Length: 245
Image (cartoon, rainbow, N blue to C red; front, side, top):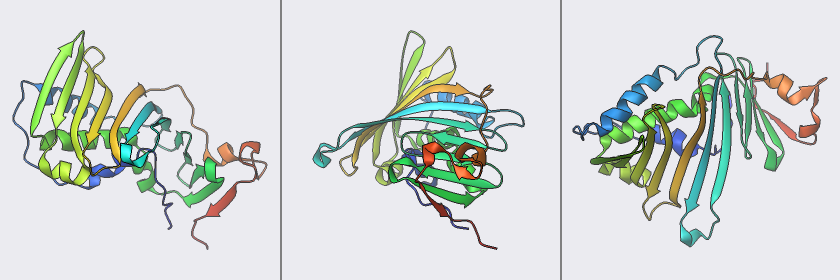
């Protein structure tokens, strides 16, 4: 089947994990890396929603571009709801509604709706927290240096990625802000070298709820009423990528 070819607002985080092999693991840096690795191990068990559970994640990405591009800084807030059967992603650039039969990708600024048959890879690629776990493990395992500083229950972990990771991702420094009481990552900031269009990107997790009371709307219900597009989507072009029988 055709899979929509779109640039997600979190494309950096979704693609880095496929670029790198394993570099030698770092030595223990006074428990610095172990703190996050233990956290990531806990999060791996939550990567795929259990039956009758809804995961709700809300995060903000702040991007500062290289000055030579003369591009204004951007900020995007994304909400992701996932369950065993359905998924919903909402931000200002894109909306995704999916279940075991259909996946709709809505691009509001272009007034286009991509209608795809369901595919596990789409669910995997929109699972931002699972990707975060995978990527952070690669970053930490390839690190050439890790430092920690703690104050008022907050630990800031500064990671210098290994050469292989830096050469492929252009990331030269990363800071992870960790809440010791809540035992979770609050923020991840990455600084890039001069080869990158991005100077700095920060991902702030506002909500991490792995037992949410929120409901996920079925994709057909989200977009259509009485077999017609809802008023919100009136005039949008539907691009049908489903296989024809």
